[in-house]
Image 1 (cartoon, one colour):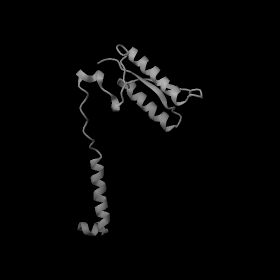
Image 2 (cartoon, rainbow, N blue to C red):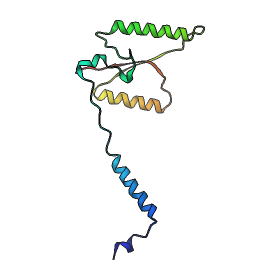
Image 3 (cartoon, one colour):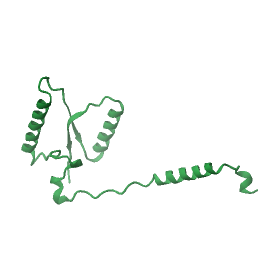
Image 4 (cartoon, rainbow, N blue to C red):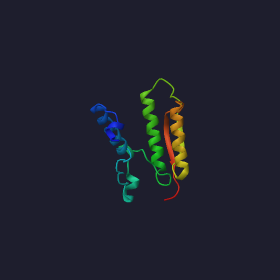
Length: 129
């Protein structure tokens, strides 16, 4: 028995669509190439997303973080001079090992539940090299 008898004739667009679906599914297995990490020599100067004063080191940048916090508070008062400032939410999270995966899952679930606040500050704790 030939394949033509077993496989009913389908319109050409069905075969083309099936082929495109198969190629798309196979292509989904490949991800974009990972970008190079920030060189170690300039790690402390790196600005995530190009945002200045968004990263501070607890052992060396404490005074700069306090200055930035005071400047941010002053900007809030200027933007909202007659009303009390809104309550603020802060998040401290571990970014390493299995705890990092747990924290990421927690944030995803919290977001999907639509009960996660918008955080004013997020602090990450990383231990080790």
